[in-house]
Length: 273
Image (cartoon, rainbow, N blue to C red; front, side, top):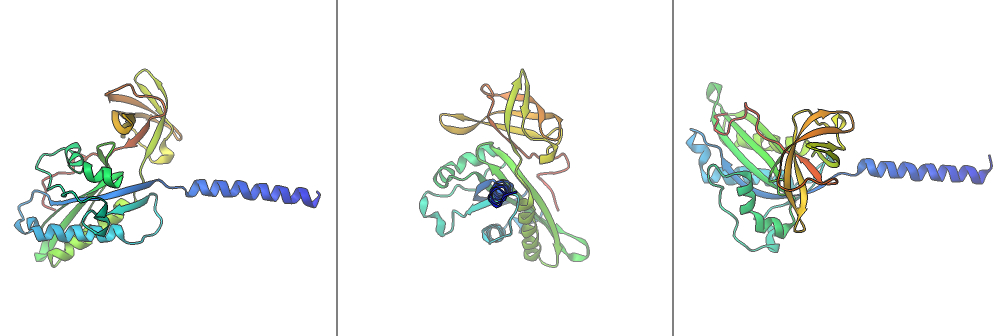
């Protein structure tokens, strides 16, 4: 083989390898907007103290803002109470009322979402109770709520038992943040629709299971909006068949679908950790 031919083949192989590596390293980029931090309904009066809410919120902000190792998703973080809040001077929304839906909570933050071009809101809930031998057990629930899907897409709960409340809350909050950042977002594209059956281009290789639900995001007046919800019925290695649960408008081929999280039956909103 001539030297020129060998060089050309090696160059082509190098370029192909670079393209594959670049594709493999590509990660979704999600802009997180820090939302509110509230105590879960609990019998422990100390856990509802306003200073504790600020304390837990500060721990979460510090963890999300710190430099971190590469994960499955690249997150950009915005704290509306920090120096980065110069892009919007409006008043922050107050705590969400009891029984507020995810859509209600996101709607309250809409001016900040639009101003920051955020993709998801960080929502924090915490609770505390007594553990064995006089220790304090704290739990922190953290979720990233997609502002287009109007639903949580990443969720984690962590518990810690310590001799004092603040240490237990700090360690639980740090663990919850680590869990969320280790999760990967599951998104797919509709490649075909046959009646009420939707075909997506993701499958078991992407961590999808039968029963997973997806919010279908379509463009309405130029903005990403939920146009329906589907549920995985049959999942294969590289694709899946889903059933349409509801659709506000005709679900079109090419629409983006985001897997949403919703509480299992064993996750209670009112609990003593």
